[in-house]
Amino acid sequence: MGSPDLFAPERGAAAPRDRSAVALALAPLAERMRPRTLEEVVGQDKWLGPNGFVRSVLEADRLPSLVLWGPPGTGKTTLARLVSRHANAHFSAMSAVLDGVAQLRELVAKAGQRLQNGERTVLFVDEIHRWGRAQQDALLPHVEAGTVSLLGATTENPGFALTSALLSRCAVVELSPLGTADLGLLIDRALGDPRGYGGTGLQLSDSARDHLCRSADGDARRALSWLEAAAESALAAAAKDPTETALVDLDLLLRAPLRQGPRYDKDGDQHHQVISAFIKSMRGSDPDAALYWLARMLQAGEDPRFICRRLVIFACEDVSNADPTALSLAVAAAQTHEMVGLPESRIAMAQATTYLACAPKSKASYLGLAAASQAVEATGSLAVPIHLRNPTTSLAKDLGWGAQYQDPHAQGGWVAEAYLPKELTDVQFYQPTANGAEAKIGQRLETWRQLRKRPPGSPR
Image (cartoon, rainbow, N blue to C red):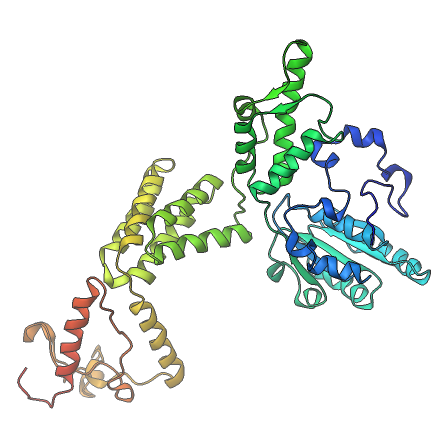
């Protein structure tokens, strides 16, 4: 099935929204170079290749509702427009930031009229994750009835951002960041295509091209915008001196604006993914990977207190008694940040990160508490054994509270005493590992547990 030009006037669109040649020429490079057909889209072969889901349903003349999920610059808006045109459907666009239920009702009413005339409508909702439950619930019956085919674009995990009812009626298309080869193809296209710099004589050095492909972080819009900023400087310089070649070299590229750090959001999906990778790298005893993810967070502006809290939690949960000094070091890193702040405190965080990653690991204390909590839920409030009760009043003393208590300090540091309720006799919640210092703890504990099993009065 053929795909019409992306920049042809939209069906049913008002004249001011038509993409005239003049308006397109004045648009940013990333806008001018938007793919005009599905075949021009790069980096998404999983969905648009010969056996890709999106291509398959379009070739079958189906138009399902889709959630286009991916980081910026992966082609969500472009793909929505191309899907609409490929399906020969009317394209209506909304912004979840600017539009609400009133605008939705108006668009849906028009879609219903078109449907009666045999014309399908694609409703594109940009940043759909910003819509609350009320807006999503208002959209749901129209998606369910087929009045519109929803194409929602989001950078957030739709499993968290969308209601389960709306999500169940959509297919999730996860778009991948573009690889360096894909970005190189787009850059070469922009240099040779008349929509970009074709015919201007602009040249891009190999080193600048390589750096641009590697540093754009998989974002086509970022790559083309960065190229445009450097290209305009090169063309302006060449216009002043006709003997000069309009060349974007690495030096000019690095002096151009628009460079950005790695993708990251302090409360979104990237935040959770990176901190998960950081913790799992320490748990897997890989200090190099842990330092990389730490650097990612610090460079992106993550709250250092959040990082320090995770280090303290990790020391308790994942290292614990296998290396009892780990918690002290993690706490010290947190205190160092409070005392000196960034940038110096990042060194303390790096020290704690590498120490925790290289330390022996144990979750025995964490798992022991979980097991004890389950026992509490299962058995309720069991009575405290009389010999462990504190005789704070004369009545308590008369009742014998604490009378049979044996003080370990008075008997060499340890006694064969029972400290659990009798209903839980011989239950073992804490199971030390053989890792690090916890191995010695386990040996002592096993000795004590065996001694407690002996009959009263038996020699130690």
